[in-house]
Length: 360
Ligand code: ATP
Image 1 (tube, rainbow, N blue to C red):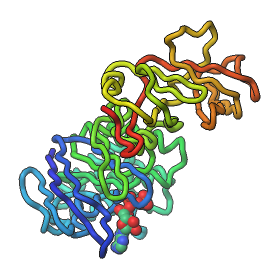
Image 2 (cartoon, rainbow, N blue to C red):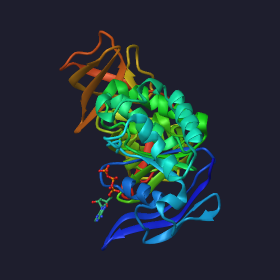
Image 3 (cartoon, helix red, strand yellow):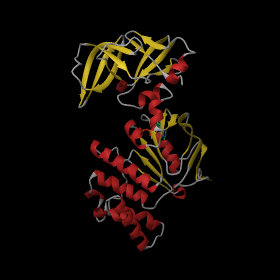
Image 4 (tube, rainbow, N blue to C red):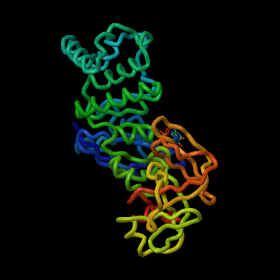
């Protein structure tokens, strides 16, 4: 178990800031997910933690020890890459034993450790095979095994599931989480998949253009995103944004009236003018009875229907906006038909129209 502290970490390539002033201290055994679009600095951050890339400035420490100038092997971190990087000419056993041999463990110690790890990952039956005789999922497991066999202080995984098919990804996702929780190894995990981030992380770091936009629990990031970027990136389908005027505490525009409550309503009390209102598609559903006078509504014509099994996603033309809604499938939706949607209580987000930051 280890605590990693990252302080004022920067990485520039010439005039370009790939990572800009990152600050983060993990808990012991925490699973931290770095998420963001391509090129936002996730891999560069991981490479700096691993020691594969020097930082331009800043400090990284593990358990209070400043490791900023340490080589990768001195840091005692293990990295799993998306291409697995297994040695093709060695068996699974030899792949896993390799780093223990380098550390001059005895044959008996190596054998016990490799078999213990193989058992934990359910790959005992594969130990004599070469990587070419393994499926993608099995290779992934072996890559994990090779990383954890020496019980590192920190585990770094950079998109380790991106070569697997959708079903296997979901299975492996759950297994990695269980494994890391069981071993209590502090883990940094990179993905560009927001669902992976939401389901796996104790905390998520949402990055954009080298800057950490928000570092928080999955629930807080979903419930109270700090700006429109985080709000739009986390959650699927993405949050709807509409320009709205504040009128008697509601956010109003052509075809819609959204009624914020709680802290958002409080924050809007001192403001006037145009805001960016946000509402998640899953918080909108058809109004089947008469609409109450104080209810928040979105009215428009159905442009598109996407069946999703038990649920349905629709796109509705509301004034000049296209608004998505997702709800339980029912008979009421038909392309071209007018629809009135209502939003759930306390689900309205409001952002400043210039800074795009949340009013909270
Ligand atoms: P992806 O999801 O596509 O892997 P990422 O978030 O991991 O992206 P990084 O690989 O960290 O992004 O790259 C961040 C930025 O730094 C990118 O714009 C990239 O082009 C740039 N970059 C990375 N390595 C170098 C380098 N050695 N020289 C110059 N620029 C680099």
